[in-house]
Amino acid sequence: MSKQPETPVSRYRASKASAFTPQSRRIPRERKDRQISSGSGSGSSSIGKTRPERRRLDKPPDVTSPSNSPIVMLRVGPEKRLFAAHEAILTTSSFFASHCASQTPSPSARRPRPPLQPPGKRIDLPDEQPEVLSCVLEFLYKGDYYPRLRHNSRTRTWELEDTGVETAGELSQATSTVFHHQVGGMILRDTAIYCAAEKYNLPHLQRLALRKQGLHTGIQCSTILASARYAYANTPDTESKLRAHYLALIVRSRSTFMRSGTMQAEMEKGGKFFFDLFVAMCNHMDDYVPHGSVSSSASTAHP
Image (cartoon, rainbow, N blue to C red; front, side):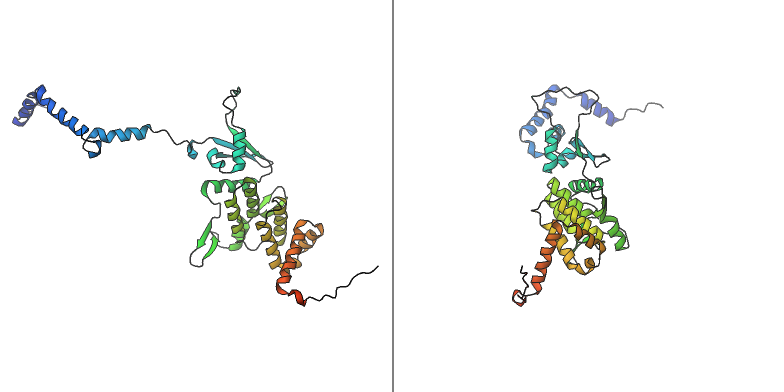
C-alpha cells in the first residue's frame, strides 16, 4: 500500500505538538496539582478514584467466614461415617466448640507433628445416627432441615413444605421415621433430632423439631411408644416439652392405644414413662370429673 500524503490537519497536529515548550507543559501539571490539593471528594481526579479501590483490594480476607474456616472431620455412628463441616459453623454449638477447643494446640507448647498426618481436627460421635447428624448440620448451615417448615398465611397454620409427593401418607413415611441403632428399630426422626439438639445445646433446633413432629400423621403405635422410650432415655428429668408431648398424644388417642398389643407389652415392662402417663391420665380425668362428686366409700382392708 502506498503511503498517503500528509494532510494539512496531520501536519498541523504534528507541528503543534512539537511546538510545546517546557513552560507550556508546566501548565497542565500545575492545574492537575491544584485539582488534587483542592480535595479528593470532587471526583475530578483520576488518582482520587483509584486509591479507594487499591485499599479495598489490599483489605485482608474475613477469617470468620465459613469459606476460610478450617474443616473439622466428624466420625459418626458405629460404622464411623465421615462428615465434614466448617469449624466456624460447628462452634455455634457449645458442645462442638468445647471439642474443637480441646484440640487447639497451645501457642507455648510446640509439639512435633508427623509429616504425613493432616493438621485437622476430628470429633468422634459413636452414639449418633448419621441421618440425624445430617439434619443437624443442615440446620446449622441453613437454619432448617428437610422438609422445611412453612407458615400458611391463608389458614394461619404451620405446615411442611411441598416435596412433590402427592400422597400425604407417603410423605409421612419418608420423612417422619428413621432407623436408630440404639433402639434397633424405627423411631420418629424429629424426636431423635430433638434429643440431639438437647445434647449439642441447640435450643432453637429443639423448638423446630418439636413443632415439626406434631405435623406428622398416620404413625404406628409401636413407633410412638419406641420414640417415647427413646425420648425418656435421652433427655434429663427436668425436660418437660417433649415428654409432655408424648403423654398428651397417648391420652388423646387412648382408645387406639387400649387396643394395641404393643401398649400392653410396653406397660408390662414398666418405667418412668408409664408412671408419668398414669399421672397425666389422672389429671385428665380430674378435668372432667369434679372432685366433690367422687364417692368416698373406698373400701379399707382390715387385717
